[in-house]
Image (cartoon, rainbow, N blue to C red; front, top):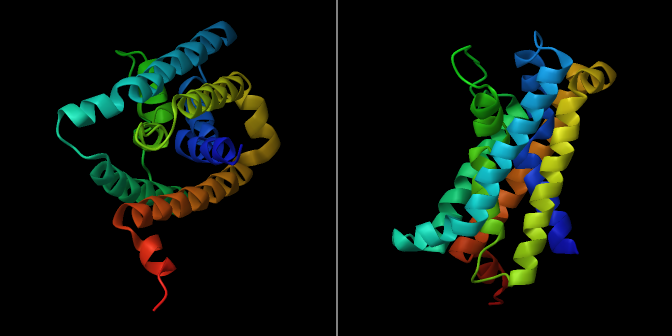
Length: 203
């Protein structure tokens, strides 16, 4: 249960439904209600395909390329830490310019808006075949789908939610999730280099 709660917090931070919701509201402001619903649904379907695909084949691809998971964990931890800092300090980490000649549900809403680089890294690390059993990996996959389902609902009601919490409230929530993500990324790096084992040794 603790693992599922941790996974939910990390995936919520990396997917960042609040940030995605704000982008969605801006890019779809001129669309009809039906078009907004279709765009929200396509966004989540595309993002779900990317994240679930990363869970299924991400580690296989890394192994085929000769990349050890501990190296990926170390590099991924550093990237997630920077990702968390960007959330805390409000630095831009997404391209938010939607152009008429392409489907905004694909770019920037699904990728990198919802299936962010941080989320892709997170799902691969959280479903490490060498650490977690198949049932645990299935649980993480279900948590991923649950976060995406909540994100979909938030996209559908994005205007109402933003009107209630305001841009200031959305910013505060994003910064809190950024701090959680930064703390998790430090744990990843410490585990990768064995710092916790050193700290646990007594002289």
